[in-house]
Image (cartoon, rainbow, N blue to C red; front, top):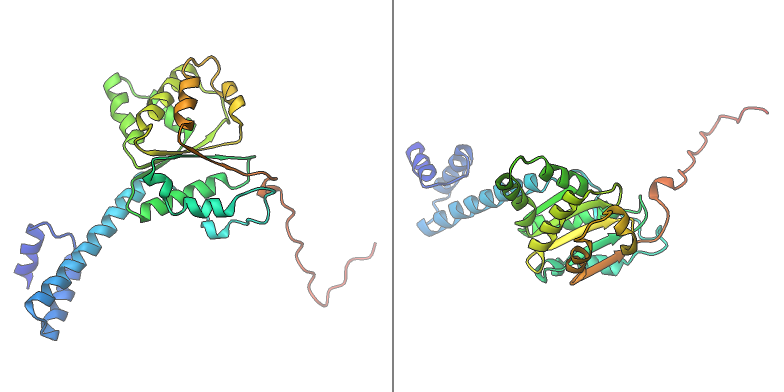
Length: 254
């Protein structure tokens, strides 16, 4: 059996020796036919490859921790389209190469909802990258040569779904805007991009002061766009529930 496992690994099998040893032992004990045994081994290998592929894509995505979409309190915002979000979760927008804009005040769940779309895309076999917009541009600006910039741009342009979080929290200089324009342009009509922001389009000029490419950037991003507006106060400002007073303890006298 050890030699057989060596041969399977030499052929490129990724299942561990322990997994294969246990499975082959079970197959021998059950007196499976050759076809049954082969189908079972192939099924194990397929599951292992899918799990490793998902782990690799999840590491690249860098989504980090987030609450599940099921925990979002749709009754709290003054405006938030739950049906529209459930439609986004089907990932039809990715297949149609549409962009998505989550727009609303800070603390209304834009990042949470965007990240959950990223998780859904990973589960569906898509490639995803999540980044704060300022971090992505700083990453590109650190590159020391044009070839290095080109190589690094592929991190943001080659994936099925790019999530750029928090546009509008700090100004972006002209060189960084040019890099963002490169990202949006190269993804235009090829792959979906999600941006979260607290700003209406008319205020984007304040984030990109003096940027000559702002109009074509917005034009490309909005050509095939789903806008998801959230109106309401920050969840973080909600009054915290008062802890119930324990029985048997009287409140202090005034």
